[in-house]
Image (cartoon, rainbow, N blue to C red):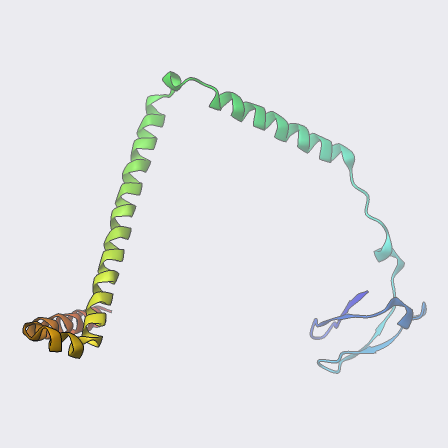
Length: 153
């Protein structure tokens, strides 16, 4: 059985044979609180299900599913103008969201590329000496944008 401390609500698993029918004092191993515990018989009763409620709920769910299936079987010509407008608005919303998500991915990728180029600046400059000014300017631009965003916050 699981017993909870009334003081700190810590739960303990205790064997039923350790607690006599008349009850006994228990001490919490966490907060050292002592309380008297007696096994109550009404907690051990088996719960009974009300079968009428369960069967009614199942019947209602089956009817709802049948109605949904009937709605789905309607031919596409019967779709109203309101439904067409709703779907068009949802499509426009998702296109806008997709655009901004692609934009964010592009910006993050560009910043990561600049940081990677700055990290590998010395080996790249040894191979391509003309890129030194471009790499320096890219990284400085990134630093300026970072400072600008921090000032906005």
